[in-house]
Image (cartoon, rainbow, N blue to C red; front, side, top):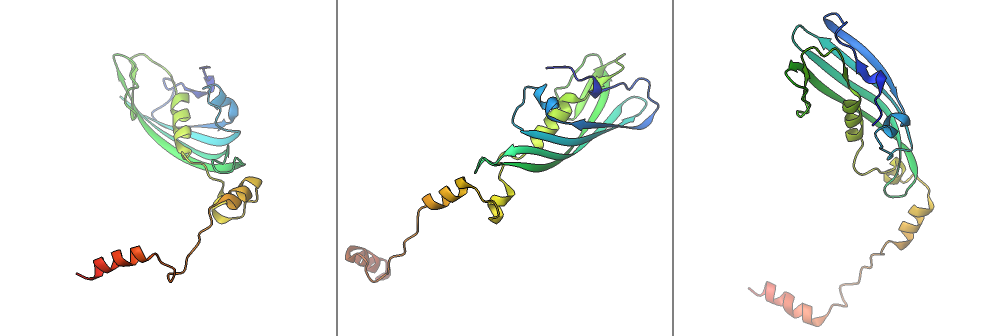
Length: 177
């Protein structure tokens, strides 16, 4: 994985209180993680770091669009996503990011990288099944949808007068109690 320098937050020189960092995220960010599920990406992410005496709190938020292929039709479309993540940063003997909500940095550390947290937050914001909004409301016109419609089994309702006499006898058993 490529190290994204712009995602380093140098906290040691910051005063106590809240500090805001903003990021524009595009395809190159995901490519650096080897993730190629998106055709295009346009996301604004913000990180608000609240620095306190003995710990820090990080609030990550994002909003934007990812261009993905519809799982039903294969048509590309812009899927709006938004997500957030809160992280508590404490100091300890060794680096530890095993817990999803707590990051432990070694004493003496002066910066940390939020790229992995941003990446996971965004990937998890995309639904498992990606369906073009035009599929649900019927506004999408595509050859695939027309073909699916054509191949869909047609329901046939048979008139109840032409029933099989063997079934009629079985139904009598149910009602003759």
